[in-house]
Image (tube, rainbow, N blue to C red; front, side):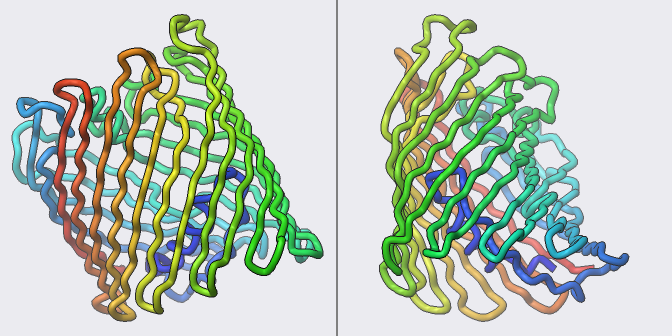
Length: 408
């Protein structure tokens, strides 16, 4: 169970860093159906018990020492996976976690139930109408917390826990010269799981298209155009339209390394009826760069950088300038062991008079070992630091956790 992690890294590299929202759907990994616990026709279920112990020195992510909470905790629950290959085109392939988080120490920490949609497509139909053309209907749901908003507004983790559901349809095709063309339309709903923070609820409707010309065996280059509409449910924030157009390219530097770049123009237009004093329009350059290399069968890594403008969740700020840089390295000392280092730095500046300028640094080190066919050991260490030009807005947080997954 849950032996897809090595394959998922390839999916992330191929799709996460594209400049356009349109991207080729990855080929599904062949699933070992014999590893699933329950088989009912073409419907498969797999269960695993997860138990962890950890420590968090700032559970409240407080900006002040007085509000800081710390404590040791235990996490116990079930990982469960669903796989349903209804036919060659239609499948459900998703992973979930349901459990209970209990604090062993620390005053003021509240125990809580947890439900996480951790990975995969909650629903996917990939219809290959020809050998070179695929139509996809995909639904992807994730339950997550917004760490930056928690820090900015001194809210708890539960207050800002969100369900994000993204459903889209895409046409992707290759012509006889291996040029690529794609069109995607979709809708992304953000729903607050806590009634006290309904203002974060948002509906995004989007559409995009791109064309990649294969100029040579090593170079592909082409234009993209994306549009996104932001509608806030509570009408506290300003609704917005986002237009993005530019060029992205892929350069195969060697059989084991690739460079992906994108450069374009990003335009934001806001309905400022809720906050008429805020600028209602902005236009700036955006771009990203990814360098990925497989050094040898045991070690691969990448560096990624992106600059753009982000529609803000704050009612007093329309948009924020973001500069993100990230480094990720994966080391496989043996066939059953994996170590991952991830370092991310985000520099942000609210684009309003006297707006906040802040930076977030996060480093994560994780270790995973398959101890036997049914037993897996995991450990992780996370350090987060936030610095701001506003007084009493800085915080740091150290977390470590280790535990086991027992395949039932």
